Length: 499
Ligand SMILES: Nc1nc2c(ncn2[C@@H]2O[C@H](COP(=O)(O)O)[C@@H](O)[C@H]2O)c(=O)[nH]1
Ligand SMILES: [Mg+2]
Ligand SMILES: [Zn+2]
Image (cartoon, rainbow, N blue to C red):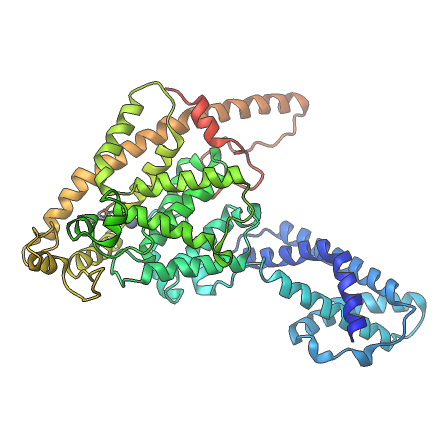
């Protein structure tokens, strides 16, 4: 048996890459089919490729083994799972019979043994590949994820359909759509572990609002802005990864209490971070600590410099979600926009995530209403960080002789009025500035893109009169494809974008 395994191992090494490519293609196809995203031509091309790989592997394997003794007795057919056996029957039987017919012989028992060995080989490869192939996403979640590009994407439904794993599914799907899992060689098991740990951190304090659903919501909204504005087209993969990860972790291990509450009660974290951006410092620090574990380190393929840039951008973005920095942030961006200088990349991305963080009042009424109820509930019933006793923050503040925080007094809070204030003074101005910033950054790039495309069209027209027209629109509805431009996106923003 061990000799058979050794042989299979050798074959795996020889056939590894073509089979890996084949398995990945099959998995991708399955996913695309389930999402109705594959054309007939693509499907046929991929099936043709799969058939070629299988035939080549089979023929090589058969040739290599044709002089050996029949070793079926050494192979345990039970070791081959039924799906693999079914698949073998469908795929290999015809090739085998063709080969046999060519030789004029009857099919030999040995061929069956080879087929079973090939089955074991594929099964082993599949098992090894399971750490790099996709996570299992339930079909009803997949269906909902079709709307992932929408402004009013219903993250609550995804959470429900996904058994409370909205962050895992939204996070995974987005990294997949931008092809970041492949580009940064992120091991799927590690990613799974990382996302699960994030979800656990978000669930630590049972917050009605600052939980994993909010993190998924902010990540999806960030994605919407990046893609619908066209900004993603000019970002590097590393910058997109950093922005999405920053959105995912931006409230990690939120205590369900405000920064002011931490400061007023001299909590451990307030002492640790000297009353400055207390929660935000904790979110980002705890998340990087998590990513230091081998089992949760999704950044293993990053070079030293890449890691440094990634870390710096994530820290900037998360710290900028501190609401006490809001007015300063808006003022700084307005100043930048009034000057001809380039827009700083980290400031642009920080503003996008900050806007995503306060975006629910700009979404469908049902979503906004739900978020508001949850936030108000959290303001009312704050679990204390230090004692674990469930009390209203307002009650605790009264008990401790502290002034009661705005919106934390269940009896005296006027929800509608305070929401109008929040929308008029915080949300609306933020979105105005973000719109101006996006216009300033994206428009010149779009113009340049259109001009260069027109030049290309003219050239192409001269070369051939049958050139088909393609879209000039540079605002994508889905993330850019792996081979679209973007190698030095933010360098472009920094160096080239002026008023
Ligand atoms: N009064 C309201 N405040 C809101 C609402 N939605 C969000 N917020 C505030 O913004 C911050 C966002 O930062 P986060 O990282 O903590 O999520 C949040 O804490 C609230 O203070 C709202 O509808 N009304
Ligand atoms: Mg926060
Ligand atoms: Zn938040």
